[in-house]
Length: 278
Image 1 (tube, rainbow, N blue to C red):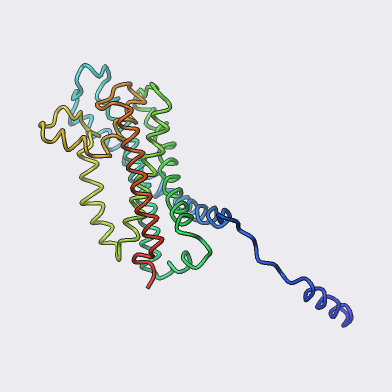
Image 2: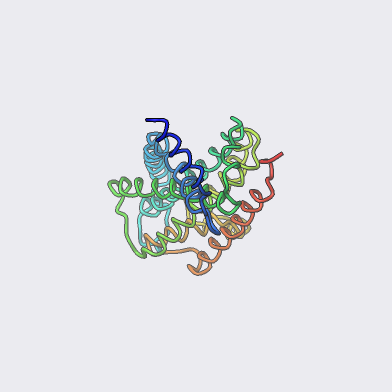
């Protein structure tokens, strides 16, 4: 390049300096890239994040069907294995949704690269959306993979597609948001293990996943009805077998309301920089 051409290019660059990108009210590009980061993160290790839940779910199916046999009242008009399958599917979904967001945030904090997420021009709402939707996507991918595999061993029915989709999406979002909250709160992996052991596992096993709640004592049945996990599993199972232990409308409202509360908590934690900013 000649010196005259170089000077001309310099004058052109000086005359038209680069302009900052206008993002508008919402940084859609940044939110999308954060979401893609979360999705690519679990797809990169798909044997661990997508394939492994298939094996775990089938093992649960085999063990509980052999151990409990015919443990469903005749009023359900389905076998125990048909009753059990939807609960196992949605449990695989929500556990993976929780694992995605909680591990992502905790690893970033432990490794010290959380600043790479906080520095870009992303608002609290955009950060919440990016992480929560990424975890929800992992839950839905697991559900989409586990369900047809489960169908090879169980006669899955389709009673109401709306309830299957609604509770599958909202349950995955619920545990994804809970993972965001746990990941922000946690200072180390032991804290995430504590949330799993003392919150997720008890709520899961007391939700009627492996049994009908009418087998519980009356005082325990009351506890089951204040457990949001019960409603997400009951509504999801209703979509398959057409039998529910709670009114469908109540389940829709409880799951939706729980998500709104968790969304507000996660947003507030990002907004205030709780355990994220000095």
